[in-house]
Image 1 (cartoon, rainbow, N blue to C red):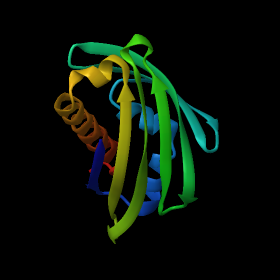
Image 2: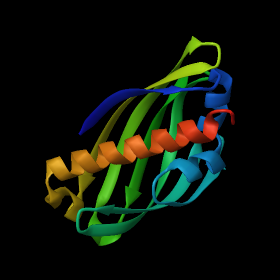
Image 3: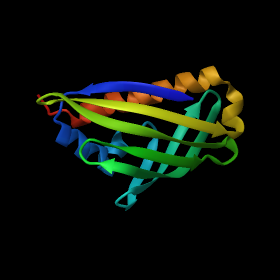
Image 4: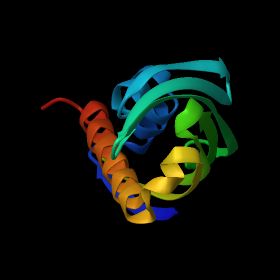
Length: 149
C-alpha cells in the first residue's frame, strides 16, 4: 500500500521540524499512541493500540530516522508487531517546504506492508483505515504545531 499527500501547516518550517522530532508532540498526534520514547537521537520505540475493522491490537515497535536533512526532511522506517493480529512495517519520506513565512507544506510518500489477521481483512478496508489514520495524525499535528490565535 502506498500513500502520497501533503499537508499545509500554519507554522514556520523550523517549528514544524522541531515538532516532527519531539516525541511528546508526536505521541499526542498519533492515533492510539500509548507511549513514544526516544531510544537514541535517531530511534523511537512506541506502543500503539489500533482497531481495524473487527481486529483490535496493541502494536509494539520501533521507528528509525534516516537520511536526515535538517530542517528539510528525513526518511522514517518503522516496524511493529501486534501479536496474533499480525505485523506492520513500512516507511515514509517526509519533506518540508516553506510556502511563505509562517506556512509550511509537509509532503510525504509512505509505503506499508502488513501480515497476519490484519492482511486478511481486505485491501479496501486497510487502505481506507490507513488514510483515515494519516488524516487524523496530520489534522492533530497541524493543530498542535500551529501557534494559538
